[in-house]
Image 1 (cartoon, rainbow, N blue to C red):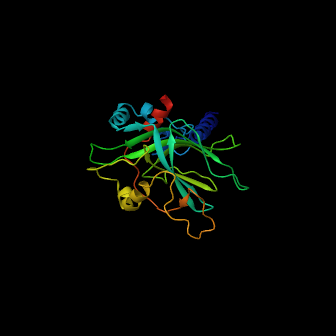
Image 2: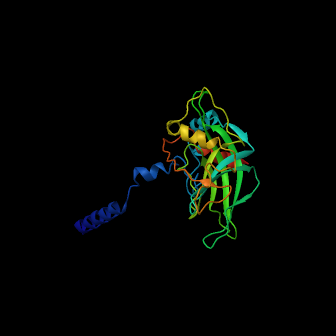
Image 3: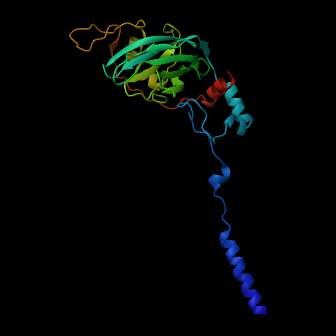
Length: 249
């Protein structure tokens, strides 16, 4: 009888031990917010905690040290019609919707609205040039879900893009006119294309950059597109600070 009970308890202990699963280290540590997480969609991802509330005083100190830049009531954007290969520089006023595009069988006009525009966001000590960031909302007529609602960066346009089959949108900068930024260093990605970017940015809003010539697709007031690929490192300024701005507005 004693041996039978011992065998029973030994078997029970083996079964219980095998059923215990130790949580992996990654699950114990929790989730961490990646750089620019939620910037493209304009909302903080579900289930991802705000690092300013979870990581303590160190992150809060980093947010306080971030140069939020000067806020402007206008922003310049590059508007591209990919079907006709034409571009136009538009000036958007804060909280004023502006209709762009033409009604065709392939699409409808879009409504653009700029909510906020921060100039030189993330500049460091007056030596490194920051970037202009604008919160844009892009809606199509008759469509409830917006095509885009979030932050767009002028020096990193690939971070947040308008996923539209016909139109493309890129932030050029805050303010109705280009600003002079002497004595400051540009980011590497911006400096590499500074010549072409400055020439494009100096155009008056709504004007063509070329004569119509013999192009059968020429549209008055819309200029040819420029393909200007830009790539660069992720900005040092935490994107979570931008989320805090929109959450508190």
